[in-house]
Image (tube, rainbow, N blue to C red):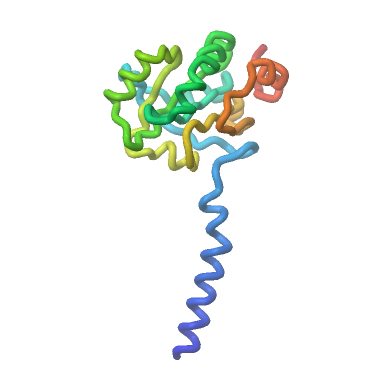
Length: 169
């Protein structure tokens, strides 16, 4: 009996270690983006499906306590201005050690010119397997992730690859 339990436990451990990488792998380039529904700090509902089929979506996962997130704001503001109407830029506060009030104050103080959403309970951040901030993703109009990094891509790089985003010129 003990030998059977030992074999079963060994099999369980093998399956666990084989499956763990798939469970913990981040949503990456080539993957379908998990759909979500959140609310902006102004109380407006936003769903990823509002944009799919129409335009690419640029997601920025951030936090008020993240120094690199602060450094990226001017570049993201520039992307928002350059691609206005052609690409949605959305900032998602990961909701860890943060509050809606802190995020509102931060948005105002630092001139974030794009919609800011708050991920209460970090459900969306978990779905995207966000391990650090900032994490930035560019999702094509087809819902497929085309870019994932901690850095903001150059606007020229986005323009150069615009046709792969499945969006109108």
